[in-house]
Amino acid sequence: MVQQVTPAEAKLLSYINSWHCDGFYGPEQFSTDELVVRLSDVEQFYAFLSFAHNVLANGGKNVDNNFEKCGFIRVNNNSLTLIPYTVLSSGDKAVPLFYFEGQIDILKEKATVSILHGFLLYAPLV
Image (cartoon, rainbow, N blue to C red; front, side, top):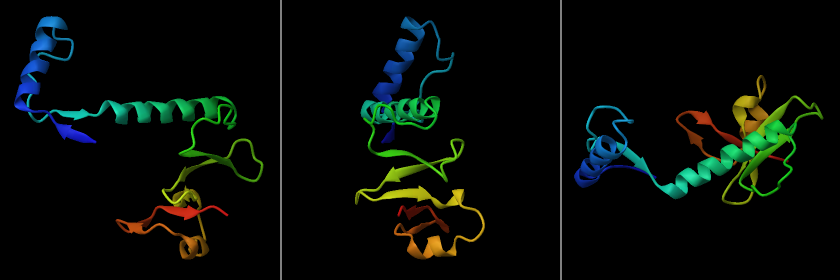
């Protein structure tokens, strides 16, 4: 979740930057237009990036098996072709449709996730 800082937070961030960080984050004062992210969201994002790096560094193998929200599927046993999937709230695994070029009408018919901004985002795995 992203939210704007309050005037008190902007003042505190400016003070910390100028007095304790020697202006490391720039000479400008922080304002209420600045955005902050919850620590738990950053931790989840870091966990995902760490997972993705480990999978890709190990040739597409999830050696840890400790990240259950997404993964990679090897296509046609080709070690170079990995397609990411995500686990939906229903527990179904889904892949992004844009990885499939050409005739995707059959995938669109079987897709379970609604269309967003004119694009069908995910199709269920079989």
